[in-house]
Length: 418
Image (tube, rainbow, N blue to C red):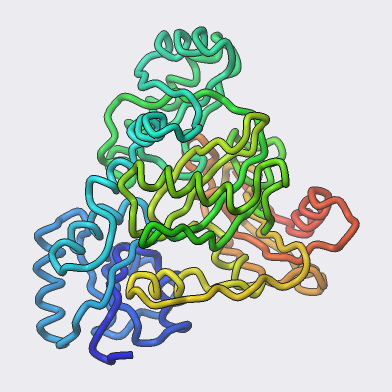
């Protein structure tokens, strides 16, 4: 590897920065928000590895990056973003430095759930019916046309944040109030800064939900990961309890069928050279796509893949950015699970104990990110502070998986005061 070349990583988190620095030293140059570094527990990179700047100020970013490259004599060999809110900036910088990355138009189309669905329907990619709405009456009218329930979503959000189920017309008023208020409160956040007062009402489709990482390059799709989602117990709609590394059921057609659908869906969005994450359902009518974005899956998925002996998806993404050939290793035998952990109520975290977890032979990794003194707010007010961390474990055979998830969660005891 040329010691003077770097992959530019735009706007990621401190734990990802430390992961990449340890796994592949001297490989990346990080563009980081000052607040991320100020709040980090991880040690800071060397001065030549990181540029701190306001990522919402394109002129500041371009000026600081140019000065840094001039001062260090580094050249850029690729570019990657792991966060949705940083992808458009990455596309802009890719154009400035002639690097391979999806276009700004493709980024915007994939981030806008309404534009995504329009492009897919125009190219015969199966996805839920949807409509832009702004009022409870608009939601109710859409539900009347569907003859069934719907789901409300922000246009550019991610994960389960402000995703609200409407089962009956009487639910529309409260649901609309929650999402409208939530969008207004998040206007200053980079993830939601481009959202209007409109949001998406989407047909509710019943089925098993999956997540997948894949690459598309030279008209070829390669699937890197398939995980089945474990839905949460008595938690806000859309909350995922965990992920299981899995394959599709036979009736869904397997990887070949999925690959063909992903190729058509990605190209419909203008994604022809990218590493992507997609959420989809396996329903009675077949594979139904929900969302697609040009970055690898986050959350506990990179940890799960690593512990299962699969590819290090963060380093794989850097390889892809540099157009290197990477062959993902084969997963170890067994059923590997990433279990997401949540705090049960609002208040101040006073104590947390999980002494028996390290002794459990199933547990491969424990990642608890909260400490005593942490203040907890619950959804829909806050979807971040109630997240406690995750476990990765290898499930015991012939024991119900959901029961194992519940058992392991019970081994974590927390004390929260009001």
